[in-house]
Image 1 (cartoon, one colour):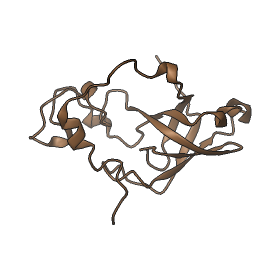
Image 2: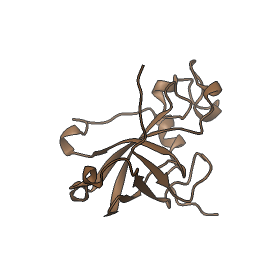
Image 3: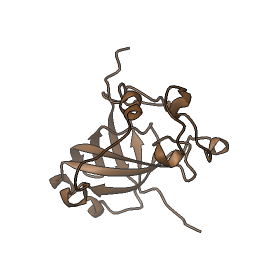
Image 4: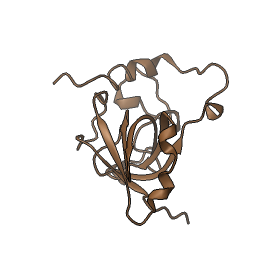
Amino acid sequence: MIELEPIAFVKNSRSKPIDDYWGDIISQIVLEESFPEAMLEGIESFSHLEIIYYFHRADKTKTCREARHPRNNPNWPKVGILAQRGKNRPNRIGLTAVKLVNREGRVLTVAGLDAIDGTPVIDIKPVMKEFLPDGEVKQPSWVGELMRDYWRKDSH
């Protein structure tokens, strides 16, 4: 048995898990009162953080165990959930690298977090160059199509 306790929660303007238009979302990650503020000491010396969070609103009954078309788009190949970054994963864990905008006490303000308001944060790690992939990163062409509007600012 693995037991995890949220260390923080996300606060932002996104209340629904919509697939695209995350580009203008600024989030606050608020450290839970049960954890000392000292856990964040020195974090502001990093430009980027990795946020590991729990897809708390993902429907467990929709966990994907078979290959499927990403976003149910038949123009893209069927691939397993572990070859995608969708929320319907067995353990419903998300991971996003974000830009750290500011730290004020227990609150981290970040840009580029694709988690909705109220999302439990499991862990926060600084991005270090030495942990980035060595060499070229490759991906199939459908990923670029899928991500075309993901980080675009909402035009509505």
